[in-house]
Image (cartoon, rainbow, N blue to C red; front, side, top):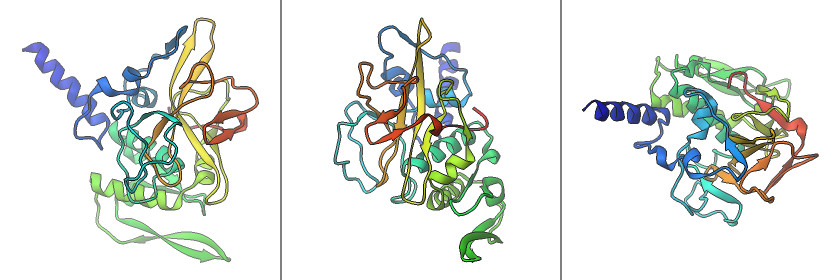
Length: 277
């Protein structure tokens, strides 16, 4: 009886960690389904951290295709090793940068720290905070000196519901981009990246790309490798990428001059981290 109660509490905790899911089974997670290559051991993380949360993201069944937001299949199905079980918010919005924003926000929501969620639009440096949105404030895009800007308007009553949180994320996805997220994050030492860091090449709307480090492993002699997840345009399932080396789907942290992923290449200067990991 005591064991059964403990199991129920553990399952409930795991379920609450991924609030978009009705049922979460840790057996079908990144850490349990994707093995580290011979000679490497998965980095151990502390429960409750962003790193641990990403390591245990739920996966769809093996060999699941990457689907686009409208239900179709991505044209090239040879670029991914696994598909994360994450729904879409909106239509063609949850693209590469958007899904990184979504995952960071979902993590903070899951640990009861959603008031720390705040991201910028591409047009502006000021962050749009969930803490203000839930109090009924909304933004309106305006022109100032010939450039896009925004202003705050009080339009609604206080609402801290899950439904309203998803509306907030929809709004952020609509107006954020590679440039704004690269500015919201901090530069990271490419040889000291951690789970939860990202590689982001920022650019004008419609340009640039980003991938998120969702897991890491290390060898006895200190070599570090990482799993990378991405969304793309058009919006597609967040998926774990394959690499083109002998440890696929893992990528070497010390990658040399370029980090070559199936659909984009990054340089060391593109390494980014969130303020809190």
